Length: 333
Image (cartoon, rainbow, N blue to C red; front, side, top):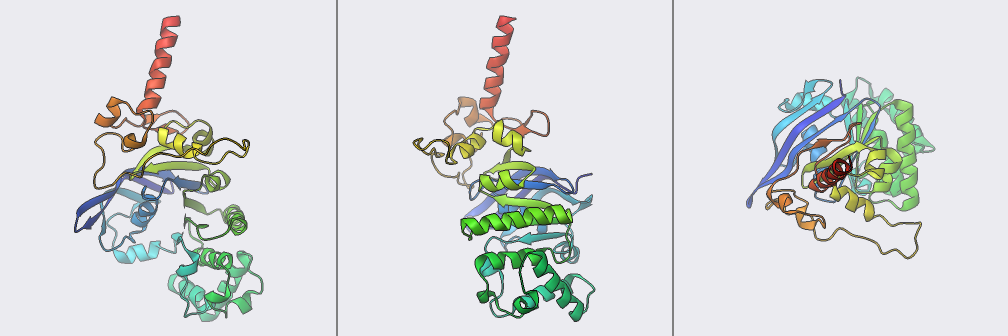
């Protein structure tokens, strides 16, 4: 049984302009000890997916359908008391911006111990010792002194380490990292990713890594789901996604990464902008931006095709290639 199983998850935001379907049937599984990457452009539904899982959507957001099972327990429809037991204890999240995630008016120690006291049976002294232990775990030196300091006395990378320590306070089964390196420079990004990789191996925690950075995906993840316009357009192992992509959107993302082997090759970009969720095309949502779009793409989205080894994708262009290959082999045979 999968540690986390999401099936046909649907979420909408209800605004004065009407309903905005942010998630339109998202499905995936996360196994114990694995790292799952969720990749896509801004607005593709990556963060909304995990916020829906934890039921921490904004006031206008609501899960309208689907299933989320954690160790076989259905979380959709669970009461708030149960979700509070799940959040932090079983599933923790590191939010996007370390610069604003900590309260500037409280010491780092008070914020760490608050999380520990809230989710465990430790007393204040035990919680303080655990907080110091966590800072040492995330490679922050002189932990006892650091606990007495305020967030402004920490660099961006150090604050992100504090956020990781806070997320690990209750030894969760799943750690969600929502763009964990967004506001950090390149060298600090590398150290944070190395830290998360070493902690994952040491603690055996499953991780959901949300990012638009394919380099992070390649470094950290075992499996990947590619999202566009609130749907999963392709999913598979890191090897399959990077070396045998089946969806034109995935191919476009990979082609937009600078090629260090060539100093003169022009950087390729996906034309156009992300589709307006209030006006989603009838067929494939990527069709208006796709150079390989066909008439059928405008009429109907392709079915999800299984290519083996958990590699799935929905794209008419790939079906056309397979059909042309079949016709050629048949004519030669």
